[in-house]
Length: 274
Image (cartoon, rainbow, N blue to C red):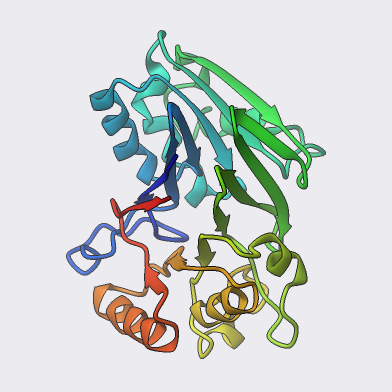
């Protein structure tokens, strides 16, 4: 009766493979939740490539992929998601921000079309389905699993997800920009009493004024929201590519000293919520 969370990509904006980004990781947004025999994937940044290889090792051939939005850092790993080329596999890709913009399949097709990619989406031989929903809908990927959704403040729109199972809850809240003067009541309600909140911590409060309008938040705001909502743990996520391992170590230390139940997510970190 456990929700197992594994981070496959924790970086924002652009992948940064370098000797200075080893401890926390350089892959862009992707995480996996395993609940019984269900595999839920959130975002398809470059981290989904390694996830795909691991799924082949585990002989996993079915999953649902939920997208917060379709900016490149959240989808550009999908062409390298090898299980999608397996004719015996099936995947559903879902998004809640494109119902009035032609749908999510159009975006994925365009990403893998000339002249930006040499292999079209049609070469993926798995049973690949695309489904658009309205943000705010509740989704039910498996028995006893409820996935709630909420809108986020981000250019072109984005969706937050709250996964509930057997009394446990995990919230995935990225990419979103806060108002320094007013807590986001929608997020406060959404993460209320959550066991784990994964939150957009791209910047620090000191960096934030120069980034207004970019659609991201800070680790300090994440702590403020989690405390106000009585959430149990906070995972800092969507790390700025300019925050190398040294910078991230300082950020994590400051976050932990501010609230002991916070930590920085790392590529391939595994958490069990039970």
